[in-house]
Length: 210
Image 1 (cartoon, one colour):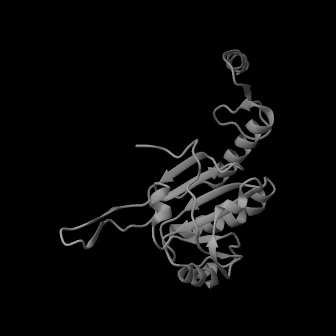
Image 2 (cartoon, one colour):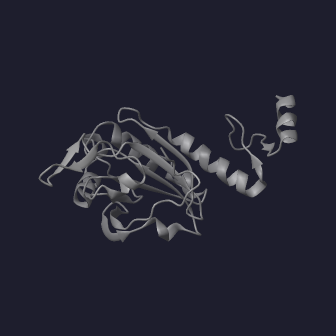
């Protein structure tokens, strides 16, 4: 089993709903390379129960990501029309109205497959009919992509397990701190706390203080 960490984030072009209502064709993460970090997260389905809590939670902290020069982009295997309809539905009715970051439509399921988050498997039977096992939807995957387009962190949760948005922010802070200072971030590090030099001597010095 391989991992995407340390590798180029798989490229794609797909339809997405941007700004809460505009359907954009050929949306791509390539637009952020050299400009922004990206938190790219997958969720299972529109019009469900746990998913809107996550999408609203990312929206509530969107300003925190933006001031860290980080874009937030969501994705599921639903169509762009489904995304658009869900975005028009009020929060009190289970909708995600008010979400402004892009929501990508992975209708071919190839984005989820390439990022390693697609639930279920598919194949051809003896008569060349496409068959699938499982729901063929995305697990709750989250990928932190740096400004060079490299995946630096990933987290994949099973369907019932919602994510912690503050942890995603912490990982953005850790990445930018490392890039700016050359120091590494120990367990439970948060912005403003002491880090350590990336050497045996630096680790020993840090542990001696703690």
